[in-house]
Image (cartoon, rainbow, N blue to C red; front, side, top):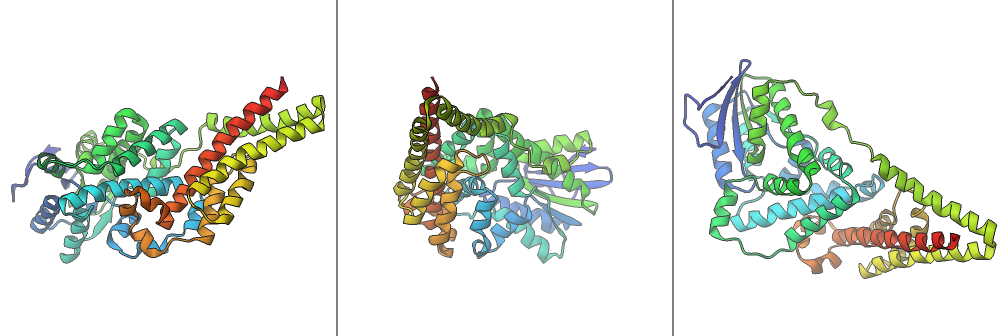
Length: 397
């Protein structure tokens, strides 16, 4: 295998020419908010006219970048039923971060990826979307993290979008040379290695294998700069990787399951024991305390979010019950009711990546309000579970 510049044209150092097993790859490392990257992509594809163009996109992301009306097809109710609001929230944070930097550079995020598909269509060259389904990537990320790591991720994400620090010209020049999203993930990876493993390392493997599988001898691959070194190293090793393992959603950890089923079991058993040893009145008082301890904080969370009145009532009623089952949380119940009575408008979906960085818009944009209801009612229920459990267990002794 060789790693040499093209014999036809000398490109910048962002283009890597790899020959292996009868195939020639032109791997272009890009920044996802760089016009220079888009220009380079057009130059390479136009000059080389490859048999196929591989792009670091999956069907979902490609649709999101290329279709302006994509939000109209998003089924929020189904998303809630599948318990994917956390995934949606993180997707919005990442999209907002990229868009924020893209606006400073005057470039739409993902412009070079769309440019690759556009040029390929101009020359009638087949296009291959080689990235893993973004939903699988985010699910694997979330399922691989503990509660503390998830909270840390959301805190860091929120801090980044609310930050109003001015970016110097030198910093902008540095950003232009990097894949911003992967740079951010690499930084987070230092604090949360599991995140880097899923978002960067696993996708290096996935992208590389998909590149090797495509038909054709000459292949141009357009990927984020943060993936280039990993892909090249994997190509050099020429080792077959099993992609099926990387498409599996890992189950919830045993410890989470133990806690999820253990806490309700302890609470219910304690109430029965209190009733047996101290009488039904005492058990009833504890049960009432549990209902109020869970219901009130959860309802207060929805009140703070300025939710629909029926959402507030549903949070109060659901929290004491959902706290005793690991199947669904109060946040999802409240969010579902909020969607039913105050569904977001299309324009609110379209503006969400801008609105999310303005804290006032969390109460005005209905999509963000749903997320606020989900987060605050869930936190209220979690607090109530702790307080209620402490009271009941204390009463045992």
